[in-house]
Length: 226
Length: 118
Image 1 (cartoon, rainbow over the protein chains, first blue to last red):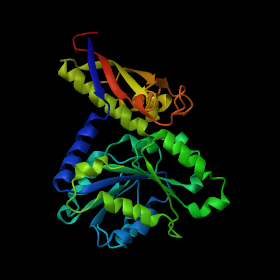
Image 2 (cartoon, rainbow over the protein chains, first blue to last red; image 1 turned 90 degrees about the vertical axis):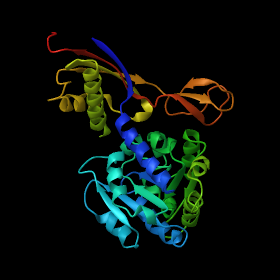
Image 3 (cartoon, helix red, strand yellow; image 1 turned 180 degrees about the vertical axis):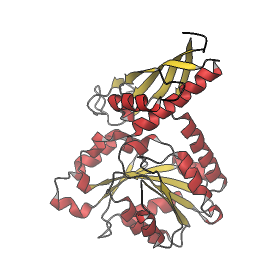
Image 4 (cartoon, rainbow over the protein chains, first blue to last red; image 1 turned 120 degrees about the vertical axis):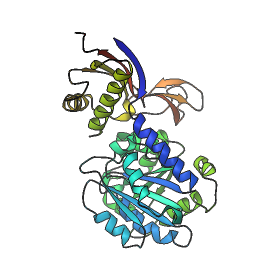
């Protein structure tokens, strides 16, 4: 017999993501999914931005990795609550893992949860975790062709952070071309070039996060902000 | 390798649909995969072959229908096929569009049979 199904393959993940979003909305917590390739500079970006959020909002991090707690240790050194989510070899986080992570955070004392996804420019972009917005990270070292090669990562990002801009002079990275390609894929995304070592753009990223997360602000309103 | 997650999710969705229909075995799954999902069809086939063992889909075949990217121009409303990751409108050159097709990841239908069949 033939049975019509017409069901999203990730329906179960999306149901768990919706539960996460409901929990976060109830508690008026904003949640950001930080995505990018391995070595793109996600953890370094967080290390640079976190001190600039102190005093404005209470932040926690869910740190996704295949193995080790090295990234979580780096975040914990900033005195930020962090839970390491290990995928045991899996190439992406899913909403259920995030659910377990959220359960281990002191949610009553948090305004912003940043989920640092597994370093991978492809697979994680397919999985809704219950976040309110995505940040895509692209490093100068990866090359300016990556927005065109990994469009899903950039298509669904509200903010694109280009990292390691201190390397621009040493590479063939074409910043204008990368910005054009990102805009073509996602005209609504804000693009911020950064350099965590020199400090370029870091305050802009911090400002973007602070504006997303004014304490007591309406999460629904935050969702529609550019 | 999100293909393995996709294969497992397909198998689970198919097994659930078969059970709901009162069937025990799935013999074929038909799915649609949009280009934006960046799924390698060969890898998906291999992942499916590995993941189906011991499930209601153990002897099932997987049909994958690829769906190309389509966009609608925000400037002139033209609906067009996006090729070579060039997202510009071919009519007016407008940059940026709403995606109208290409992000699918769907189990469309299955063929299933009961224990006393086949």
